[in-house]
Amino acid sequence: MSERREPSQPASQQQTGRTAAYDSAFLRACRREPVPHTPVWFMRQAGRSLPEYRKLREGIPMLDSCMRPDLVTEITLQPVRRHNVDAAIFFSDIVVPLKAIGIDLDIKPGVGPVVAEPIRTRADLERLRPLDASDVPYVTEAIGMLTAELGATPLIGFAGAPFTLASYLVEGGPSRNHEHTKALMYGDPELWADLLDRLADITASFLKVQIAAGASAVQLFDSWVGALAPADYRRSVMPSSTKVFDAVAGLGVPRIHFGVGTGELLGLMGEAGADVVGVDWRIPMDEAARRVGPGKALQGNLDPAVLFAGREAVEAKTREVLTAARDLEGHVFNLGHGVLPTTDPEALTRLVEFVHEQTAR
Ligand code: CP3
Image (cartoon, rainbow, N blue to C red):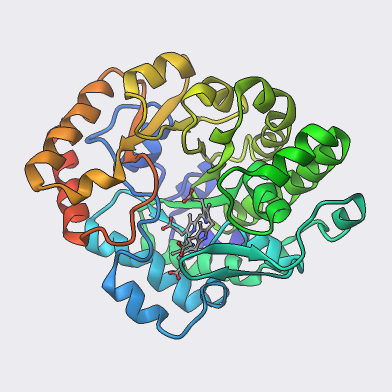
């Protein structure tokens, strides 16, 4: 896909490997460089809170929509047009690479990913074959279309981290307590390590496909890893996430690492190899910075439920986040988790404008 950049970019950029988005506020903040304003994007910005999204998706199952480059491109662009966010996030799902290698799964509306036959034995591992670019041609095609449309606005690629993918595969669907997953992790450490290692390879390949196609940053979602104590995270999960980050190091794109309820894990999640650590709303950004230590940017962390309060309350809580983040080396403003489906889109648009105004320098 190296031809991708030729039509739209001057020769000087090709020589330096710098895309049109290189100097965007978002990528500068990820690199801990000075920014004209604090960049803003929202996890789950592409999706259910937007009426234009719901209209487009009518009658099309979620996973089918992820395999249609025209739909993916339009859905990814919708929040960029509407909210003036500083980055786009690729419209897909963490289970798309698993579907692409032949795992029988579906995304059930209002439920989430459901796996027909959970993976729990050594024989089951054979179903997790490696992924390559030819398994996801629609991803490469959609990202090519998107980067052409986005110009200087960066596109964030993403994947699910091995633990979070394993939790869906082992449980067979969403889970509150992750009991089957933990039973495997504690009860058969060798099988567990092999499972996570296979998932790390699939995840790394999925991210590399997105980077080769033109994504200018990647986020590894370990959404449910906050269910683990730090010692278990370090022993049983961190090696596989480190493998993913190592695989995409040196490709010139910042690597973001995020999970929910991970206050106690933030230091380790940075150590795993992230350039930017995502923070949920349960701890203030300055405390998160102390836990992560120097040399990393942070992303976060307004409680998504705050957007259901009035404008003044949203502004007050946003000021709190910005004040706590004042001395960070790099700050990307985001919610502490994804946009909730019934959020008023106008509140999101106003929030972007407010952060931009408050942080203009
Ligand atoms: O805007 C974006 O963030 C980009 C698209 C995106 C989706 N899923 C689309 C989607 C991203 C980044 C994801 C990641 C994802 N998927 C995660 C990690 C992020 C997080 O929230 O922690 C997880 C855990 C999943 C698994 C998953 N897929 C869940 C829990 C759900 C929601 C189920 C429900 O309906 O409540 C999905 C489905 C899904 N993925 C939707 C969207 C827009 C909703 C499907 C629909 O519109 O019918």
